[in-house]
Every structure is written in C-alpha cells, then in structure tokens.
Length: 192
Image 1 (cartoon, rainbow, N blue to C red):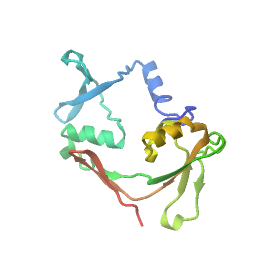
Image 2 (cartoon, rainbow, N blue to C red):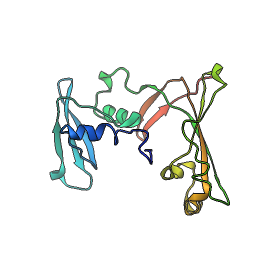
Image 3 (cartoon, one colour):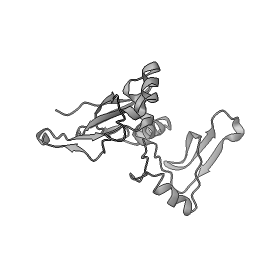
C-alpha cells in the first residue's frame, strides 16, 4: 500500500531509482503476455499496452528474467506460463498475516491525532506463536473495510474524523495457492 513519507523504503524509493541510474529502463502500463524460453531458461517477455493494437506489442530480452509481481501475481504469471510442472514449490509455502480492522468516525478530528504506527505490537501470547501487530490503513485502502456507496462517501467526506486500528497475527502456518477460473485462490488455515 506504499508509505506517505517513503520511510518504508519500498522498491520505488530504493531499487528502481538505483537500477535506472545503472541503465535499466522502466516500462509502465504494460501487460505481460508471455514469458520467452530457450529450453528451460527464461530469456525475455512479450508485453503489450492494453487497448492498443498489435503494433504496441513489445519483446524484451534479457540475461536474467525476474518475476516480481507479489505472491499472488507471481504465482499466476508462472502458472499461466506453463512452468508449474517444472517448479515443485510453485504455489506452496504461502505465509500470510491474518488481519482484522476496526474503524470509527468521530465527532472531532482524529485521523492524525490517533494514527497508529505499524511499530505497535502486543506480546504475551507467545505460547501460541502469535504476536498482534497494529497499524492504521492508508486513506486509499479504506474501501477495503467493507464500505461502499453512501457509507464510503460519508467516511471519505469526513476523513479527518476517521481513524482505524488494524491488527495482524504473525502466524507460522503455511498455505497454498490454486489457479481457478475465478483467479488465484489461497488455501490457508491459522495454526492452532
């Protein structure tokens, strides 16, 4: 979800600028169509710009191909490229932090006053292997709190009076990803 102050040192702040200083090129808005292989080695990709004709397809070749599309996206790209049978661990060993969020709209400004840093943690239940970690959702992810329509519009109009506390469980369990006609679906059970 990014960081409003760039303090979390995402790749947009760290790796991408350094790579571009070293001669890398960044192509945005392109959609991967397929991975190019020579034998079992990935040697490039074919990408296109959505809503444009075939002349906007581009082929990129490289000494090394890195898939960095997040847990779900990388799995989907590799699965759709037909390399799943070559990668025994593809889709396995999924680790996530189950989370719950509670938000409130106050009659006074609360957002910046009660902003919860992600550094907040609650220990004391280590016997189960859990640690509760607190954080406040960025504004652009508030819609993920099951708000929609008039309720979401009301919160967004009064965003300075809204704050929330989200809690993640650091869970040691492992799950698995499956590719379905509806997209990538996780199978994950919290460890007891």
